[in-house]
Amino acid sequence: MRFLLKRLLAAVVLVFLVTSAAMLLAQAAPGDYAGQFGRSAAQIAADRHRLGLDRPVWVQYTAWLRRAIALDLGESFARQQPVLSLVRDRAGNTAKLAIAALVTATLLGIPWGIVTGSRRGAVARVLRSVSLVLLSVPPLISALVLLTMAARTGWLPVSGMGGPTHYIVPTLALALPIAAMLERLQSQSMVAALDRPSTAAARARGLSETRLVWRHAWRQSLAPLLAIYGVVVGSLFSGSFAVEIVTQWPGLGALMQEALIARDTYLVAGCAGAGTVFLAVSILAADMAHVLTDPRLRAEPSA
Image (cartoon, rainbow, N blue to C red; front, top):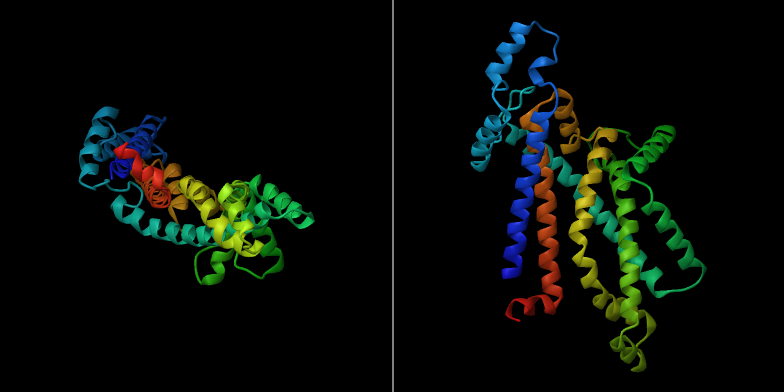
């Protein structure tokens, strides 16, 4: 319990630091929302006063922080709507895409890693080579390649959010590099599990190789994989921002781009905070799963 409480506190601190940094950087950047429409100096001054942009940065930040503690993230300058409602709506779309990509990556990457970690030969070498290629390709490049293929063939929608077919391009763009990462981790963990004395003892008892790999060694290889799953999910959400912009997916990434272009300070901070909440929750969930699968962590606080 102490281990998980420490992780929870670290997650809260992470959200606070990233959101505050986004707010301060957006305020410190040259120019502001009121001064980008080419109007007279008097009109700009009036808008800056109305929006509170003429106050010192630290005054704006402390006022925003007091409201943020009460879950009031302010109002979007451009949309004139509460930031919390805007972020909540878009976060749901990002979560749908991320969950689809994570499930796809898991279903591809873990069996893939089990095969490459437990077998030798030409097939395993080809699979490892494909994994290395996909691992080196950023999600943005994957999205552009898939969009080009979809546009040329006409088989799939190339943008927007609609039916199930609209998920295919952005989901694969996010899932393929993650699947390659999971393959590498699962393969290394499987090799280590097959070299353990318990695995050798199971083989000596006459356990078939298929059962040894898929039921015995795989269970032992799961704990190291769960330990880094939170980081994997974090990379998934960071990559989704670029993919959302390219595929015009109405999620947090597209909203963040809109906020940055408009110099919408409160909306920038809200999008950064929502993305960090996703990251913090995923890391915390991965830590909890790791505790459940690794008895050494449960024994650590009493040591």
